[in-house]
Image (tube, rainbow, N blue to C red; front, side):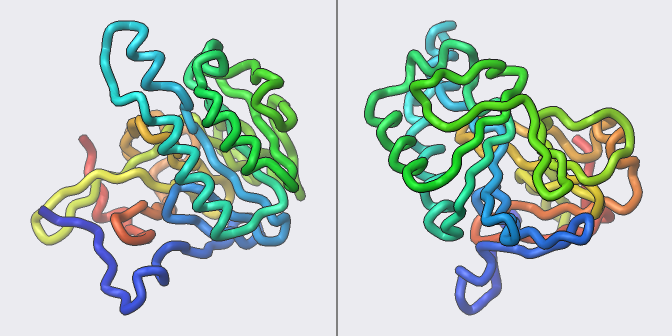
Length: 240
C-alpha cells in the first residue's frame, strides 16, 4: 500500500513546510500545528481532549490515552518552534464536562507547557466554556496582525482567516494506490487547519462542505505524511 514516506536524506527536513498567506509567512508542522514566525505563535485546532472518556461514558470503549498522546504531540511541536504564544482554535475539549475528567498529571503537563508563554483558548462548538483550572485566557475569536483566528470558518469566500472545525483530510491516489491523511487546506487567502487530536476523524477536502469556502479552484493541500509534509496537486485528490 502506498505511504507518503520521505525520500530526503535527513527525515527532519520534511518536518515542516513553509508557505505564504495574505503576504505573511507561516510554517506548517508535521504534527498538524501551524507556526507563525513573525508573531512567534503556534496554532493548533480541534484537540478534542478527553474524547476517549466521553465515548466510554456512553459504553463505546476507546483507549483512555488520547489526552496524554495529544498533549505529548503538542509538547514536541512547542519544543521544535519555541513559541511565545500558543493559540488553540476551538474544540480543544471534546465536551463541556471534559475538564472534570482530565487526569491531574495531564493538567500538570498542560501547566508546564503554558509556563512562560501566552496561552489562548478560542472557544468552539464543543467547548463554549473553558474551565479556569486549565489556565490561559479564553475568547470566542481573535484578530492577530490582521488575520482572524476562529473555530468555525466564516461563511462564503473571505480572506485573512485561519480556522478549524472541519478536520480536512485528503484522499490521494498515486501509482495505483490510495491513502487518506489529514491535511492543511487553503487557497492563499484563508486556511482550514487539520484536527490535532489523537482520536479525531477527517472530512474529505472534496466534500461539498468546502465549496462555499474555497470553490474547487486554486486549492493548496499540504498532507501530513508518515515522515513529513507533502504539498499535493489537486488532480491527485479523490472523493470518498
